[in-house]
Image (cartoon, rainbow, N blue to C red; front, side, top):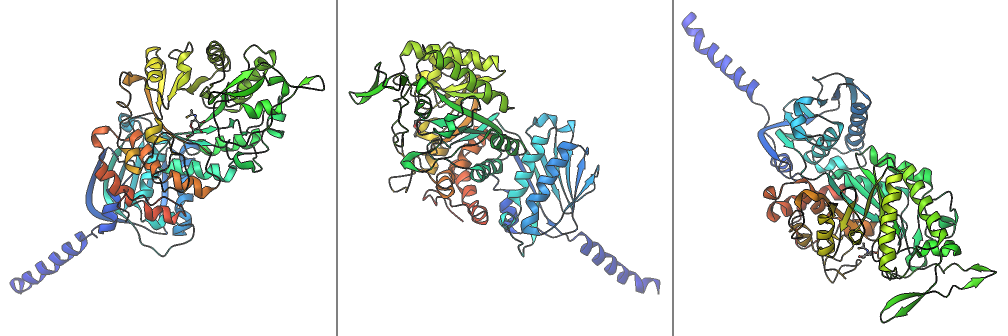
Length: 540
Ligand code: TNX
């Protein structure tokens, strides 16, 4: 009896062991998604199994505090529309289906770094700071099926391949700029723009709030700036502006996505919208001279007062200026910098400083020095476009390189910090090629590969690498007037900005990046993004 039953028992035991260890293998799709994250993570280890997100899943947070709750709520909100799941948040629970844990054990990865571990029954994201948890969530988003981005419930199997990703960024400054001055974009568009940046782990969004064509931020002590100066835009549309309360809402929205808003008030040039709003700021008539412009002192007078300039709806640059010697100018810049600083919790304020072609050089330098002093007095770090290197700047200022390598070297020699925005590589308003329906091409045509194939650290020879904070891709607004226009110029190039800023040069290659970018298209379609189907990318 004993001997006859034994083989049968072995067979039964064997098949039980086999069946219980026979976990599901990851599909090719989930495996590819795990390997296609943008920006490319530091290390990726794939272990072959599969995790499935189901409706009974919960999100565990540890420790349970305001910050981990906020991140968990963001995650639940992100997963809800496409899955239809109401994921409960469980306090101090490291056994939950998805765990978000703050732990000093991961401090080696820095505050923005994270470790994401997927096993067949659990997903754990660990970081030393909430920022890292948020970036881990962005990675999780990309390793879920692309249908996760849909705005209504999808009939999908929410599979994630098992494995581990450890990650951290190279640069602390990763961002883009949106010009809301040439054409105005309202709250909804700017929020979307912020979300697109968050998706690729960017941490700065710079808003170009004023220019010749429009003043877009309320200044309570100078109300006509927006009442009059905000009324139009390039081409003659109705323009618009943000109240200070709306601006605060944008700052908070960005902050909840670990993005700092950098407000730019462009001075002393690019200032016609202010000169058109207040005659007392108008320092003279601008006349063309040998293809450039010149300010003549003749002040047109109306009713005993200096006449303001006319509003401007064209696209020429470099023809307007504040006058340093005017008392009203000093009051104006003092008030504006004070009010902007007061509504901006972040440490930075951008004072423009570009293309002041009709400002006397000595006045320009005096302006930069005055801006530096005012920014400091208001507790802010001053950022300016590269030309500010001509002023007495030091390690407390930041210069944004866009065109002239000499200015970048000059800033570096003076000890200033540098943000890289070279127009020939990463100006997001440049056309991809001559057939692009919108965009400019004064700097270059910037195809997807041009935007990717360069390096922040080595782009300008002779700049101290330590001085470089990171990267910003500016989207100037002369030719864009809708969300579709923004998306067409932003996608796919935003992924190049993100990867250059995040991933070490030795981990980057065009072959890998273009493949991974090609796989983003399905996500962008789910999100309704009108991306440019660049011929350089192998779209999937
Ligand atoms: C130059 S770059 C400008 C902007 C224009 C842009 C168009 C810089 C600091 N100034 O005023 O909008 O080119 O590409």
